[in-house]
Amino acid sequence: MEAFKKYSPFVVHTDGTVERIKDTEILQPSPFSDAGVTSKDVDISPNVSVRLYIPHSALSSTTKLTTLVYFHGGGFVAESPFSPIFHTYQDALSAKAGAIIISVNYRLAPEHPLPAAYDDSWEAVEWTVGLSDEWLRDHADLDRLFLAGDSAGGNIVHQMGMRAGKPASKVRLRGLVLVHPFFWGPNLGDTEKEHKELVERMWKMASPPVVGIMQCHWVNWQAEDATPLSKLGCRQVMVCVAELDFLKKKGREYYEALKEIGWEGRVQFVETEGEGHGFHLIKPDCEKARVFMDQLVSFLNHV
Image 1: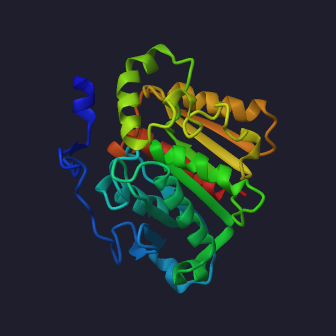
Image 2 (image 1 turned 180 degrees about the vertical axis):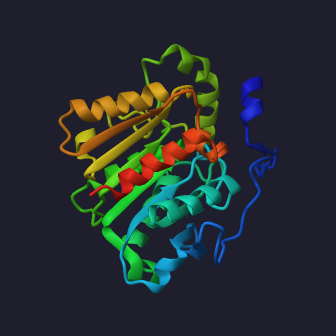
């Protein structure tokens, strides 16, 4: 219980209102950042907004750019694209990869429990392929459309990939990047068992009490009602884990499952030794974070 209190990012008052007590700082978009990137905010519906990033030099060019839709982490209950750690990282990644980035501001639980985050994220993906903004119309290469996200955002990436794989979908994805993704289910390892109470308490805030987390297809791709991984709608997947992250085991199992089912795409596994969950966001200037960004950029720009 003490661990849960330590990590809880908000207080739920008796009247039902929610007060977030950490990670509430926001950064404004920049017309020209130190990295040479221009960013702006766009409301795409009453529920969903995005922050767009583009290398400033690309605005005066006709070159089409790799296009990345990004979903932030935070356990479905905290953070936003405007948080310092996410804004700073996307700004740097846009510059390094020479890419347009669409960072999605989806609704958070417990005010808006799942599947609100999934529905909002899919709305942002469809908005992106609709080229509804001038930056996208002039500069986005939808033949190089990727989705990426960390932690809960990595889970969202998986769900978006499954939606893209449905026959009626008009979304065509080049690849997915799942960074320290949140998956759960039976056969927990010792390290996972140490965090089991915390994970289950957080999940109760994020998800309606329809089914227990172990049986929920949103976090357990092996659940009885889960769509088979073979239906994943993309050509390439990069699964990234950190050695000291208790979610590492499930991330590796996801990678192994993609290989074993005979999925026709290309799957890559990246493990960063000696680091924990979200290290690249917490200390982006460390050597291992720089190496990780190089690996991510290489995946995005591989032809």
